[in-house]
Amino acid sequence: MKPARVRFAPSPTGHMHLGSARTALYDYLLAKQTGGQFILRIEDTDQKRYVEGAEQELLDGLHWLGLDWDEGPDKGGAFGPYRQSERKEIYQQYARQLVEAGHAFYCFCTPERLQAVREEQIRNKFHAKYDGTCRNIPLEEADHRIKNGENHVVRFKTPKTGTTIVHDHLRGEIVVDNSTLDDYIIVKSDGLALYHLAAPVDDHLMKITHVLRGSEWLPTFPLHSLIHKAFGWEEPVWVHLSVFLKPSGKGKMSKREAMDLAKDGKSIFIKDLRELGYIPEAVVNWIALMGWSYDDHTEFFLLDDLIEKFSLDKLNPSPAAINFTKFDHFNGLHIRNLSIPDLTNRIHPFFVEKGIEVNLEKLEKITPIIQERLQTLDDAPDLGGFIFDEDVEVTASELVAKNTTQLESLNILKEIYQVITQLPQITHEMAEPPMRELVEKLGYKPGQVFGILRVAVTGRMVSPPLFETMEIIGREKVISRLEDAIKMLEKPLEQN
Image (cartoon, rainbow, N blue to C red; front, side, top):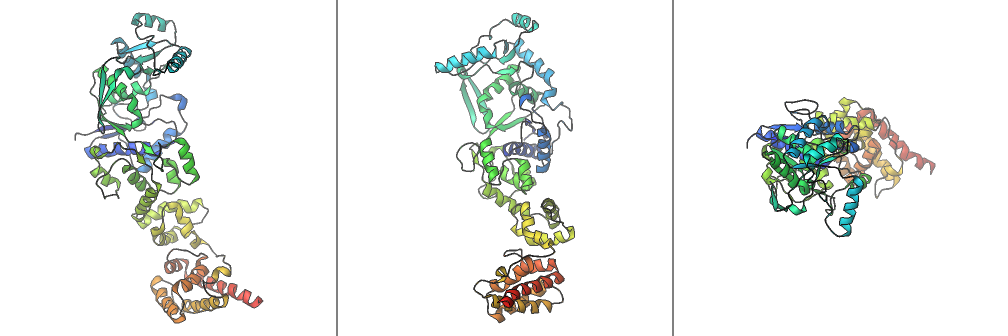
């Protein structure tokens, strides 16, 4: 393929979600694979829906995912400005060209009249659309009315007979009966262009070769093709990506569903995923496979792998259900693929967030023993935070092993104490063999003996690998905790 120029063109109207991230990823992969350019363009013409801070969240989300752009509002480039709100005059110029060429017209219909027409059409069971009242007003008359300050919009003059044939890379030819098309507004009464005009103009001027976007644009796809034809421009390769379904697979993902997910600690928003302890490598891997596959068995991909293997021809237009179980699986795989220093740096903020004072040198010793058990980075403080505690709090009942009496568990604990105190150091290699010999000698199950030791030393029924954990806690503290546990078990016996 020739070098592709692709654009990710989000609207700053809310949080960056999985659908936007996937579009950006596919754009990025195509650009990098072909030696082309990945362009960031902010489509902020809908000022009513503009959300303060949303643009920065988009930039932060892309950076976090590792999807750096070549041109954009913060970097500039030969085809700027890269915010549509700064290109108003450009769109007005091209809208006027369409009007003068007979492909668009000025419409002076009031909102009240349009609403009345719509209600009448619905009442008569007709398809609700513009009725063409201003379609044939002479340009001279329209210019005079505009000069006199009459409110107006610009509408594209769609053909009313025949068919329009458009080509989507995933779906092939799509044939549309022109009688079903509307005379869509392309410039609003405030002079700002709508997406229908702004996007084709920008794509042409910025020399975009491929347009990847959501399939929600399929209904107005013929209009965008017709606008290109009206200007005599070569169309880009159109790629309308599959929609995301709810985790149940029933119905399109919606804002309401997203709110329900939040109650279960899940989210479709990139900012939330980061805070929940997911890592960008896993997000990229997961969303890449929601609409694309390399073969029927390869699932683990790093970004460089995807750049090498991605292909538009292997995209799938079928809807893709959001599978969080799969996501958790990928996150675990990618966490285990990280180096110990890298993972240590990534889990550190999660300890801080939970108020755990962390020594980084000690944390780097903990990281290897919890890495295998991490599903998200947020799991790390729960798995390893106790190691930073000065003391552990346990009850006598917790120290009693299954199927033993309190006295039996006390005797086991005293035997453990004798073994541990005789060790010059507590390391995995030094502590485990004599402890296993003790299990054989006492005739109890390993789970009973090691369970008592685990609770006494860690204060937990479940912990990372026991002997590695003890090594990090340190000999002095381990012995002190064993002594406290013995006193704990002895005390009720003395009272009895």
